[in-house]
Image (cartoon, rainbow, N blue to C red; front, side):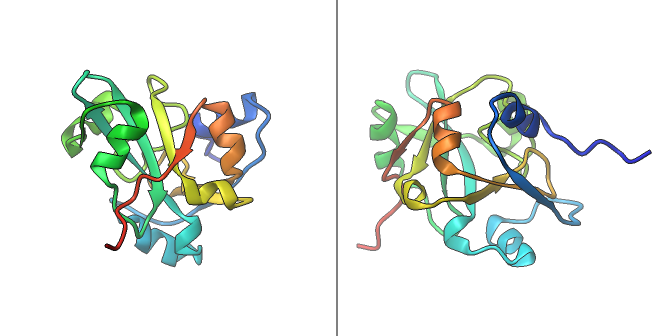
Length: 161
């Protein structure tokens, strides 16, 4: 019998009636999003990484941005109504999200955190995000995702000034 490959993220999407496709790839340990996208032949501008941060208030937040871009912490804080945010330390990712580094996705975490997706995704029909496990990528509609998790679109990346 084949091993079940569905992740919590996939189950959540199915429960919400959101269509998706997924790809798997061989990976024993964390590789960054750029290498993942290249390995799967995905365009970098359509492949998004999930970063988790915490604000001064103690709340946690998810930020999705293109894998080749860098999060602007000031813009990210403004997008969630905080004075400042800091990225979660790698050692705390599993404890806070239930996911491991490289398999973190805003879908199906232990708790649904406020999620901000970079505004470029709003113009895309489909994009790629982690599927909730190292070695799994999900392709879905950014608008459907944002609606399902009650997220929002905003400019959260460093600009090349």
